Image 1: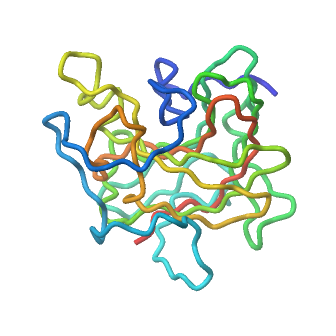
Image 2: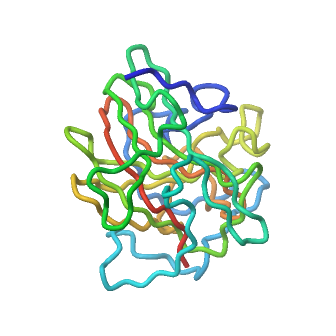
Length: 265
């Protein structure tokens, strides 16, 4: 496997934010945190459509559950670009792989265009999905894949969260982080930073799901996303999302597939 550089425009190692706690504590799990005061003058964002806190004990979609979906990408076109939307601000972006650049770390595929791959066998009527694998030698904050939603920030307040299908392969680690990067925690967003009075960057809102060797259908409500603890924002800025990412923490070998990623109402 070849080493994959950080996504274009990511800057320093943590700018791609493959692991939600990469700027501070290494090896922690996503905590359940109490509400805290907003640490800057920025707005606290939105809890998303509906407003009520969802059930976060199970993040799998039940067979009888009907969700109204807005497909972000089903990968069936075979390219890394996400699907355009009919929203007032159309979605535009593409998939990328990223890692912490640790010595000896190796991630495949080496070419970004090869992230969308054919599944053998197909998953029912789905023939392609995003696939990446890597060894356990990413020891700083890990590695993963993600996609941009907009050239600036995307307003996702009309949705309760995202759904996707995923599975792990072979001896892959199983706990996968799902991370939303918003303007508050994005180093380029102008809110967080290293200046006096600013909250540190990169403590993105996230949760984790447990993969198996079989395909599972997951849903991630925005209300179930938390920070690692040093970002101190009251809520995600759901009207200002830049990226959504799927990653594994430091020291974990991974081999996983992601398919049919969609927002849901």
